Length: 404
Image 1 (cartoon, rainbow, N blue to C red):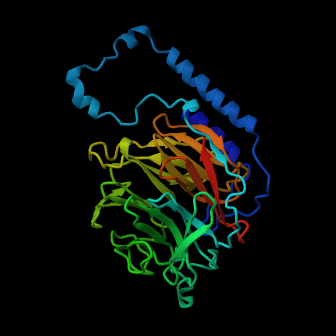
Image 2: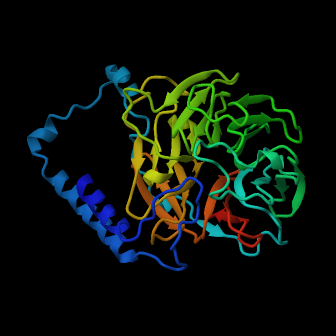
Image 3: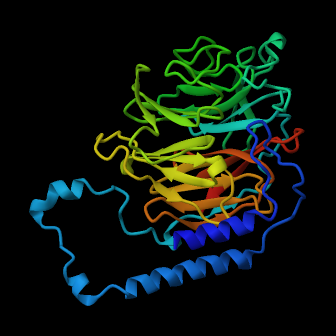
């Protein structure tokens, strides 16, 4: 079945796939409004479903009888099972994001809005590049940032918005960052930020300029455990442990304890997992999963996070990869599910996806975008925010969806 799926995927994307580039978010030759036929994807899913049904019917009755039912003494064995091997979530029970029209109520002049997160008060917070743009002249072949001499961005790069109106409530982050990328706000209000030009990840108290914690060497890309290279995203657990997606060059995930001591690298032997630009990450703590937007592999993968127990680390990750998923730029957890957005990928529609990592399936589609980059779910789970990057203030923006 998997061979059939990937054969169909290759056939669809070979029509006009553009080779990935870490510095190019908008592949050339991608005309507006050009989509693959939705009927094709429906037929693919129907064919896969029939194959699975035929396989189930082929199981002999005596083989079914030989399946052992776990007893009370098998508690240890049950704990060894993957935590996401549960009954798939019915699509009808999952909220569908619905766009809030005319939000924000006033127009903003943001630069490329690379990240959005939620502060503990329920306000959406955006991270943007002001006048800076990432293009082919931004880095050399060794990933060294070309424009250090211009200094950090002088404007405020972080804005706190009002959840109801989208109006700017406050801002900070001026003369601090060179090329913003990822931002996550933890439950204590700390800001976790990545800067791809500086090749560093930071932890800040809000409205302060001195970081509480710094990972990576300033303007020095590298692949050692002390270096980062264009880090993209950070996910923070309630335990204080945190994960850094490192990122465009190293294509790895680094797990640290609360003090910044490296605990684990994903993937690592004997882990059969190969990442290609892990662009965003999100935690499903109750399932002990870390879900990764594996951008250039055009999938979402969810290895064990190891927050509850180290048992199972290195086991095969839950993998969501379907023909219409494309290059995944953003992921955000919501209960047992993950919302995701893809970016420009050949002729695929650019939109949002609702994913069930336990059944490794896409269970819903929503929205319509041009070049989305990040996303976040509100603290109370009532809203979803998606940012887009473009070439002017009209295309650099943040969208609000209610989860109805």
